[in-house]
Length: 209
Image 1: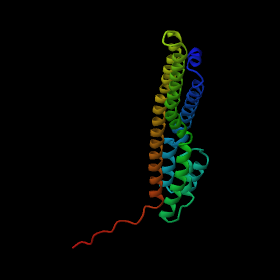
Image 2 (image 1 turned 90 degrees about the vertical axis):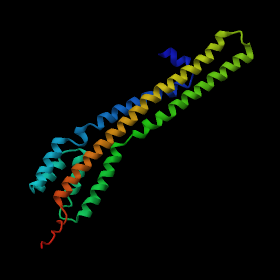
Image 3 (image 1 turned 30 degrees about the horizontal axis):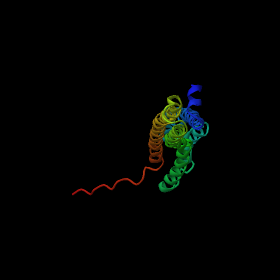
Image 4 (image 1 turned 90 degrees about the horizontal axis):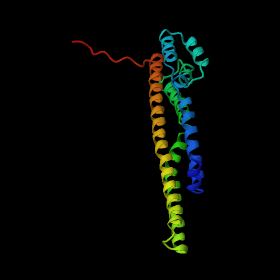
């Protein structure tokens, strides 16, 4: 592995750094986006049941003792019990946006790495070809070994850049899909609590006869 880094030239250093950074961000996001840290099912079911029973103080206490995204969102709604539905929904959306931003933290780093890694590989390819043409200019076409060094550098950097970019792009898409799924579940739970706190006006009953 070290031999490949050396053979690829100085461009391999930022490519390797991008690789390590992508792995670190991906593992950190997997840890942070665990269901138990965002929308634990048992907790959500318990809070919804407490609200359904009218035990709003107990529900608020449960939210305050759980440091998860769902707890913070539901607590914001419970704190506004008795307020108009529009006010509660506005507060839910505000807190939800903040939680969404927290869940998407560092995700743009993966997208950036997926975008620049092939460009770094291309930069190394250009550098390798320049080296090859310099050898041709100074030594002619007879020294095959010198020519092979430049061509090898060009191919190694291209391969390295793509090897980093492709899995990083897949990781980026996976993390984004996981965030979307979590946000959808969070929205469903928040809507359920909102309907229990303020079911809205009943539908008019058509007069008979």
